[in-house]
Length: 542
Ligand code: SIN
Image (cartoon, rainbow, N blue to C red; front, top):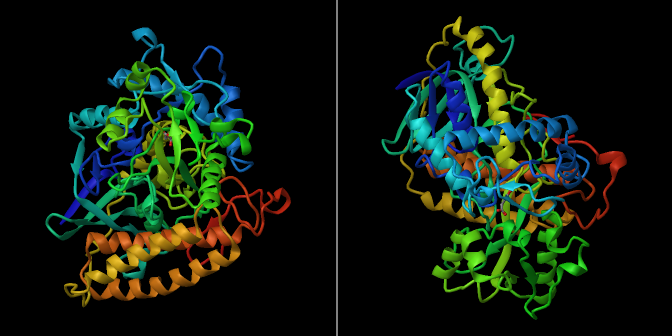
């Protein structure tokens, strides 16, 4: 079956829905999403949206904090754009009906939280469930928009590009590449569909599932980066994987985050002996940037051999804790931990991908008519280490800029017909009776990525990871073409691609900077490495 729209949005988090709502004013939008609409990383975002709107704050201070956190790799122009346009975008959310916490309930006076790396209180939030509240409002609005159509349980297999069609003999000229849509697996009907669109927007989120332990939801398998890479998009800075220092450590808690805002409100990190240890690592202690805090936790765990350290907020008044962190309080309580009385066991976990598909300031990729927004994109805002709560902000600002930019694309593209329909060809593929291969490879990748390409890296570990991923890639390629496609197989292929991109990028950066820490090169080397890592299919990393 073939579906046609002006815009194809891949993913239904804050980036995808913000873009869709604006683009729907002048075009039709199909949104494909892997599970239910709200199964997104946005929905799990606890902290909030950073914005320099406090009386003691300024745009320059927010810019400065972002640049410091990014360790010399932020694009200052992009930082200025996102920080400057952010406050207006947040007010738009308020107008859309997002119930942010307001100071004394006063209209437009946001209650501001504090998080690591921020020199001021500047986190606009909705209790400790900001993402969920934003997602709720955006989904509600989108459902009322006649130009928006949702397709749930649809997993994108690959992008359809001009070059791909040329290789299949479906177009004759090869002057310039461009994107026309995507092949998508309807996982309920087990049917591959073609989605044609005049503009395609990758909003598919991050890649936490590449690692054994992650705060991300199951959908975060790096699909956008992997399919962008296969289509010829430029990928940047994949070595910068952010590990959140404080995920709940409990056998039954899958991926539950203890928001950085807990440290912002005075939460202390203590080791198994009850000692506050951040004093040994950084003058800002618990409020140092996330890379510093996560490595400090990791170092304490390695020194002691214990399974977890603890985050303690129990010295704050009970009523305050319950009101400020209702979700964290209730969830921990459901695991038998009363955070008003006792410390919370925590460990670091993969949380955010700072690299991704390289874009310009309007979210355009190097492939015409293909855009990327949100975590899948690398705009230059985060540099080598994202400042907490800057990501929802980036998604909002870039979605707005992209929605303005695509108007022109739509005019140009509406004058041209779509090419002949490129049918999905399953070849000789048969039903798989070896699904176990998929789960074994999946498990193996996630484990060695955690052990060898995690918070602390060495050349040796990275080389081991490289040889493992190359073997697995061969197996997956074999498997992919021999068996009928499934959602698990698509995700496995994407995870393997993203793992390889992270490993290759990490190997090419022979220094330590931001989130990339290599014991063999413990120093930052600005002379050689104050630059982005760039990967493109067929080209070696530079
Ligand atoms: C948190 O609440 O700690 C997460 C915020 C973020 O990742 O920006």
